[in-house]
Amino acid sequence: CAKKEGGNTQRYFDVQMLKDFNARHALENDLRHALENNELKLYYQPLVGLSDGRVNGFEALMRWDSPTRGLVSPADFIPLAEETGLIRSIGAWALKRACLDAADWREDVGVSVNISACQFRDQSILLDVAAALGVSNLRPSRLELEITESVMLYNTEDTIAILEKLRHIGVKIAMDDFGTGYSSLAYLTKFAFDKVKIDRAFVKGVAENPDCLAIIRAITGLCESLNIPTTAEGVETEDQLQWLRAERCDSVQGYLLGRPKPLEAVEKILACDGKREAVA
Ligand code: C2E
Ligand code: MG
Ligand code: MG
Ligand code: MG
Image (tube, rainbow, N blue to C red; front, side):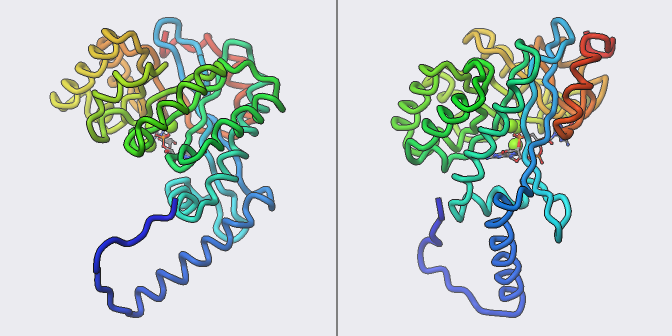
């Protein structure tokens, strides 16, 4: 997935560039060893249904627990993993780990795994998904893959063919960060997504910015006509939750409902699930 610098961009070599280059190189080197050294972890954040207030799934969010750098956020290493191709082994690991973890949860609780566009460039995603389901024995419909519009942007025909095969296996496909990319609306007609996740940029402003509310209303209206359930991301306040309920979002996810936490927390969350009055 390495991207080449296009055109005749002329660059001048200076001290800052050298520092950046060295830092990037060191990060890449450390990341190469992160997987084999067991430094990658999956954190889990609950998705809560608005009709019954119960947890219906967890999103797996990767963390890199580096002995020298501390806890590194995916925003700081996923792009590099994509550029270097490391995402293929890291992504396969995440699928397997998430399926193995979810196999121990309540039957009606699924797991969502984020998939990078690069993982769609060849058929490897199919093999990785099959391997993860095989080793974990997880019912395929309990696995949901979250893809962004960037996946659809590149070679749409081939991508849709892969999505259809994944669908055939029985896994669910969610459109992540909806509303932030390009020509979002058209993609929804090209493949029957199982879920649309409304980007948290719109949720953030839903209570005070009429534009955000208008966009959320448009997305939920469209998804309702297309029969696609919606999840609102990044719900932080009670106020936002009430607005999203009024706009008939199907489920919610965000710090208000629970932050991403290590696997150990999942059991505790499920043990007291349905007893929280905040949501239902
Ligand atoms: P995403 O898939 O859209 O995940 C949601 C992000 O929003 C997560 O950031 C989550 O921690 C954060 N979040 C959740 N609730 C709230 C909230 O109420 N307020 C705010 N401000 N943020 C909230 P995180 O964990 O840093 O992940 C960032 C992105 O990295 C993800 O965005 C996803 O695109 C990517 N990513 C994470 N794990 C993986 C992975 O295993 N594979 C790939 N390819 N990408 C991953
Ligand atoms: Mg996601
Ligand atoms: Mg998202
Ligand atoms: Mg995102």
